[in-house]
Image (tube, rainbow, N blue to C red; front, side, top):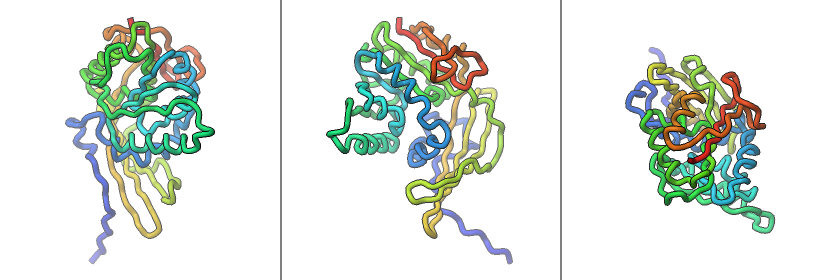
Length: 280
């Protein structure tokens, strides 16, 4: 009789097959322990100098949507930006606070303002009207709003809390719809905090709804212990023209569209899609 394979302990949040009932915020709590490790190998910090330059001109407090673990928040705050970060995920925000504690541990060498973190839904921001001269939405955060009504609600909320003439910076990820569908592909291997990590990924496209769903399986090995963490992330395709129309309907005017983090002009083949809009 064939031996049965031992079952790994699984931290499971959802299944990619149930994407019809999914919400865009699901998956991020389980992703939190692995987010910085994965992004260090993919995006890294190449967008941070751009957002630092933009935010330095705010002349007042800056609001960052979907701040996560503070990947962008903390270097901007250390550069002198007065910044508030919002995120729906409590585990992400806990890691952001730990990052701040490490960055400001030596008060004699710390510079800038310590950022403030608020757990909130970006579709209903818990701030007063006209509270910010600038709002930032880095690295595809608005693409986690997977229904048109969710995006409309978020843009209306931003339009309420931003000052007239204030700047709204939006960074879209252009290659989401270009991902081929595949199952159980090893995408990354490496070490993090004493563990060996393997990312096994599956991708499903729902082209009718303009959604791309990533099933993430992180296999974590520590000594003789193996644990699997499984979750899904769903992103919506948003083109620059479509996003520009949405911004205009929400009361913004598009000021610039950029194709990289050095400020070069945009075209639809660019690796980066950035929209800078002004509140009317």
